[in-house]
Length: 213
Image 1 (cartoon, helix red, strand yellow):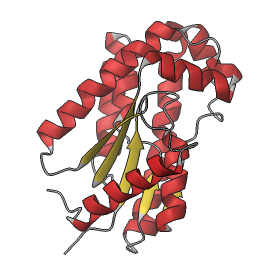
Image 2 (tube, helix red, strand yellow):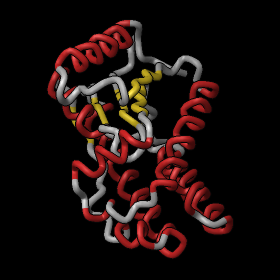
Image 3 (cartoon, one colour):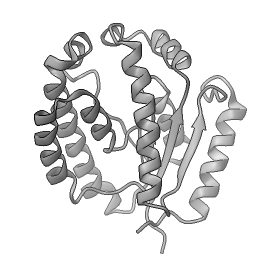
């Protein structure tokens, strides 16, 4: 028996996760789950001083994502309603390990493990990645004030962290489909052909079954 699709779209800041998740939700008539970003009161301060505000920033994201996934588990997946989210909960680990000091990270990891121990696991991941130049260009185009102070070196390191995490997930869950898409070559916002190719690839993946162990 196939599991109800729970698709997550992941990738570094500015790569187009939300845009693609919205288009998938519209095309497949899935429930859309969007992460809370602008509502985080610490994020602007975080980009100004990562060491000072990283723990508060990451805890806010973790608690909000936990609440969202808890709601999805209760209201949608249990009722066999497909979901597409513009994030995977594992992104918390990427950002926390990059920005938190050792003692803070240890405390954070303990809380993370407790909160996520029984969370629903996505059964398809779409991984968007792109070069630093492409990401910086898209971040500038969307014009979020809180992102204007972001250090490009921080963003570049996040890209490497994402690659490493995706490789880890593939090794840990060999039957978990991860669809890798190069954002330098694809423009699913401006080019309909690119979008349709992504839809076709996703449909083929879903046809093969999305149940993982």
